[in-house]
Amino acid sequence: MMALAVFGVVMNGAAAWMLHRGSSLNERGAYLHLLEDVLGWAAVLVGAVAMYFTGWAVIDPLLSMAISVFIAVNALRTLRAGTGILMQRLPEHFDAEGIRKTLTALPHVRDVHDQHAWSLDGNYVVLTVHLVVDTTDADLLRSVKEQARHALHHQGVQHATIEIGTARRGLRTPAPLAWICASPSSARWRT
View 1 (cartoon, helix red, strand yellow):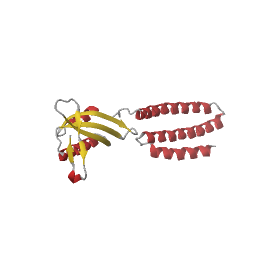
View 2 (cartoon, rainbow, N blue to C red):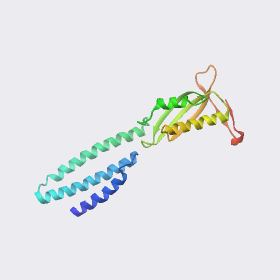
View 3 (cartoon, helix red, strand yellow):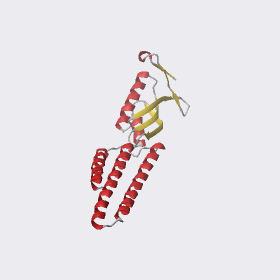
View 4 (tube, helix red, strand yellow):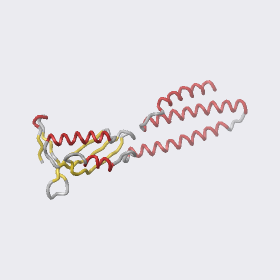
């Protein structure tokens, strides 16, 4: 039994070590699963040695309860993080106001609204945003969108869906720009 426990500790320990620096929720879950296996095998080893030399059989349920508490605490943390992702909670490290300031500082951008960010796995940040601009020139609009993507990437956004519109006089909501394109060379904008 002790030889099998040593083998289990070594094999699961090596696998856990390879995953211990993972940053996504999936990697963390796999790491915790392997760590729990390591603890289980270590408990078998410690329990076998303790029972062999002392005859103290109560060590086995005590170690089992300690491991169960460890598993429950980590399962609840993982469940909380996973629920936040499923409910599309704002990522913890996301600075919504900083993103807004960065985007409004771009040339031709007059306003930013309908900004929504979420994460797919705890790390990969997705953003949708609507930029209100003061131009309808296709080349300038393409440049604004490229600059916005570049700025968002540097702010930690891996995927952005950017909608661009212009403000109509007398209206509070922006008018969307419709893209009409047969080919990139014949692209033009209309309001």
